[in-house]
Length: 340
Ligand code: 3PG
Image: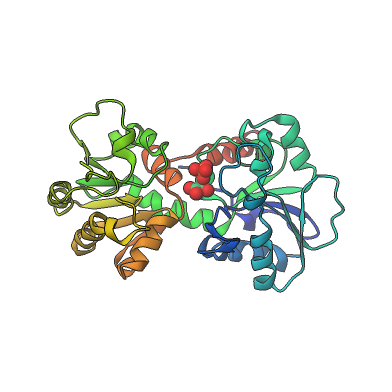
């Protein structure tokens, strides 16, 4: 894999940088329940400001599907971040709005349908907000969206520190994993099922729980084990816990994304808790992806035993399967053509 261009390689002074972050945080009644995705963006943001750059932050939040959904506004993120960096910040929702502050944020990118369709006119409008582009949003860089794959064709581009931390850590696991490699997939997002196909060649065993067993509509090869669910369909059965545990105990590498049951409710936590205990006792190299799994392991006091926590779920698996992502290819292609 080529060495990835870093934000440190860009001439930043007096320039305006479009910084793509992943502030896709969970909100409860307008309050951010886990700020880690925001906190992790600080090294890059602070570096840009120290280098006398102005910053326009671009992010998405949730899946508003091209419509303005007020409860998915980035306002709570702006409020939290401006306290953290001790600077006033504007939140703008159209491209012509006047930019007064040193740091500002554009409203949720996914309020515009053109973000997900990677529309060139929209990308050009985004690009007009700055001089340079920095991608520090590893967890969404498996999406071919305007702010991920479109912007590098308009602006000199590089990666932020959090992104490079992810590719350094995951790159080592990707190229030489300790076998057997056991993947544990759970949660509720249906598109996780697409991951099974992608990660098949890289893994030795794939264990599937959470809501996913209800969504499976096809047969998979033998190395994919789909959990049985209890009568209410909200947790995996004791039999499945036993079967999963015997596979996990033999693993050399374990990669886990997504709780195995409806962990928001105490009575459906058993599968996730017991599997978490088996994972933590294993001497295998242990990787966890995505905010939900990290939050659950924190609740069980088991998070310290993880070797690496990735901010991405889908992006992490795609990177492990392919050693690259659409967001990486877009910046590397620009470099090879333009040599910025
Ligand atoms: C994530 O939470 O994994 C990223 O923000 C990507 O979100 P998406 O699956 O809605 O594209």
